[in-house]
Image 1: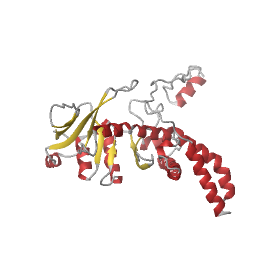
Image 2: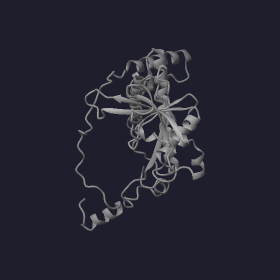
Image 3: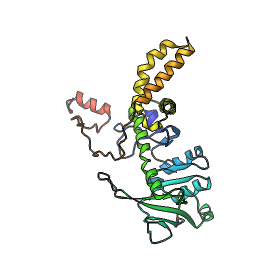
Image 4: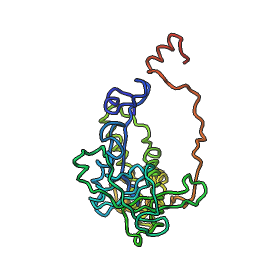
Length: 326
């Protein structure tokens, strides 16, 4: 966001950067609907501080979840205490096993090849709670661990361990867990749609209050577009995620003059126009490329400018004195 005194006070830049060189930095976390991609809730805070970690933001957001829901998340959310609290609320979780944990499939109750149920011992220290609360927690947590072999060439990982509280191996098979965790990548695509397609990657407001309004305005517009996509998918009996988000924005921009002309003149004409809009949106389908992979490289070259290592007013003063290049 813009480097103003108000933004710096609410969302300070990392301490490693000199004043006047960096930008105010906010941390945001969101729950996305796996079926349609809509944002269910969003949390905004500074990048550092007590309760401002990703797990801390999870605890602020999980009231949006209801009993019977399943939280699908990456390995950072694979934390003993958070999984236990979610389970107490009747919410199951599917995450990837964290690096500091190792899975030994010779132990526990075997469900199949590379699939078993084990008990995770309670951590000796949980920084988010006090000692007495820690002692009141159960000694262990029952977790299902499933090994997923990635055979498709081009993927970085060859083996993934999925940790979940979905214990019924007949209702949720190992292949179901593998497909479900693979669908987690949709969250990354939704973030890309929100930040790049909706142009929210660089905020423009100069005060924290307006910054938050700007963020929530983007969320509102994003969810409205997702709603229209879901209506188009329902009308044409297709999956919402099979419709292009960028294509929907382009169709809405193309129909905008017609919608403005119709106004409140004729409800029948507006109804037919809206049905034509949904039909046009439904025709912009995303190609089915489940095994697509791309190199993690950037083709576009960066501009050959030096980095600004001093505050702007100091650089301009040096230019006037002839001590720096313009």
